[in-house]
Length: 360
Image 1 (cartoon, rainbow, N blue to C red):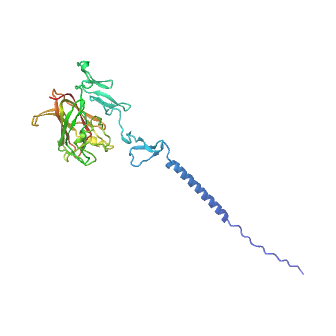
Image 2 (image 1 turned 120 degrees about the vertical axis):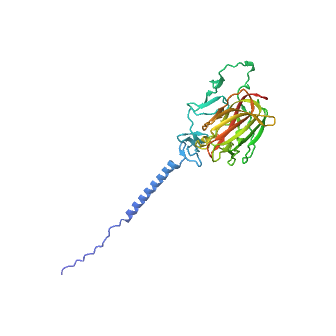
Image 3 (image 1 turned 60 degrees about the horizontal axis):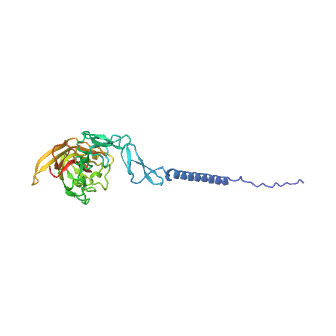
């Protein structure tokens, strides 16, 4: 009998699944992405957010023409300006160039000052009869006055009138076009001064200061051209009418008689453009006036007249008077504009005269 062999059935073994391998791969990818993200975040922080000295930054309400950088204390400060502008304090102003007019506090009243190649304000020229010598204007004609009689207070040299500015006290929301004040204790020019403003150009006081005739005499020798208006700017404003050819004038009364040598008009620049300068009244006239005992004007002498006076931002404009052999204690300044609905803005007017006396 043949033997039977019983085959043992083999168990089917399924191949292992790949789920474990996929999970490991996914975790590796996620880890790599996470590391890349962290690296990019750190790099972005150091590149864009970390404060470093000398790195550019931005500041709220900063000058639109300014370049700001972090200083050694990591404060964001104005470091420079865009092309065509230069730093002035904490702002950028239109760049001044060599040859531009400038002003030196306490400078020679007979001189013209300009920026040199290094943008330093220096004396360049003097009025007729004077020459530049050692940074001053000296007479071309030798003096016949004995040295013992010459003093630093020589009345023949043009001096500022009034010697002390008007002590403005009017609140910012009021206009004053007739005012007077007394000067005492000065080396010269003591007494009562008075200003009377009039004309068809309206005084404007709706901005943020005493923007009327008071602004003409409230700063004195310390006045300078302004590139921007500010809270301390109380300037004279006059607005022409819609037809143009409007006239604004004022009378300046002094307590003494003088020969008027020149008038300096201190301008103001508003904003980054020269618009406010180009809107200035082009026609200027100056008259000396005489009155009778009852106050009636009985005589008028023209000292200056020009229909095309031009102004420049940052410049003090000097109007040189025709010299007459007579002294006066009242002067009338007339401004005429042909520019409709435009402001003539004056920061200060400085009168320079000589040969003071109590009688004509």
